[in-house]
Image (cartoon, rainbow, N blue to C red):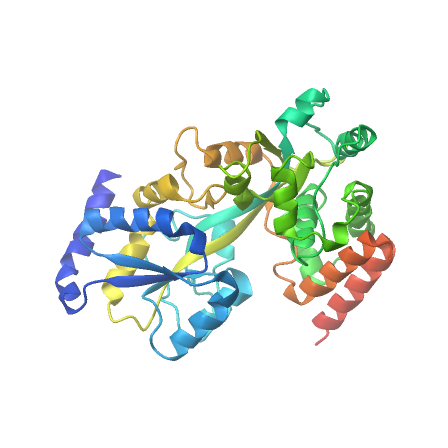
Length: 405
């Protein structure tokens, strides 16, 4: 590995004279919360190579539009955080991304599933995979201990725990539907790997399997079983409210993304937080939701293409990924095929939860035309306005119409 790092650094040092034309490169991102961590990573890179990269994040809700405007105007950052699948691919297909196919380490150090979120319709890898996220049931360890509750290992046990808490006057879950994304992304997509394999997901995407078949109705039916354990005011509770409610000890559990761990276990709250995957029904294989969240892309129009490629090559190396893992925000899981998590870190603990379990990305990500309709159907189930069977029929009809276009 030392020899590989020496080669990478030698390549970087070779192009350093080009840097005389500009003092620094820039990196765009939607992660405004990560300034300290990413700046530390970039400082390490500067220490190793002499190349300075400045982190310049944009407010997340404005990032996509701002980045596109910058790239269209020829003033985009040299490096930028890339969304996965269609959103990231669209930029690549318009020629904005450095093609990463031949960057050393990219094809060797990442699995096909990790790379799958970063390949456009022309087969080009448009970013170096950086981090994945998962979905967990967070639980308050003190509440569990005080009520002699063990971490459930089946979905039936999970429902029994919810009922036990409710009977004791304790709010089981703090999830709501006001945010119009987390009930799908965190809850349903966290459940689905327990019911549907990667191969079966592909069959749904192609239309070979129908989204109102017995399996998908079962998923929605089990989702509906969680509704009695949501807060009474669930319709007005968004993701932020749900986090606060759990953090203040006003609920025993919260189904959310791995990225929330840093907040929930941070200084803002005084609770001991544990986590476990949403359990599979008895007799079914426990799955693990692992979704490629973002990669780092290079700007094809950068005035410093060699420096951009050298950084991407470093990030795709085990050495670069190891440095990234030291500062990556809590709850973001490295995608590289190597154990780079620092010992004792939450990354290692979260990886351990998924070890040996079949994993898959979020179910709907290759069927984005269904995103909003699925949220709407889940919300209707929660409000008692729709049955699981009716929701499945509606979702299937929309996807069949989409495939017929």
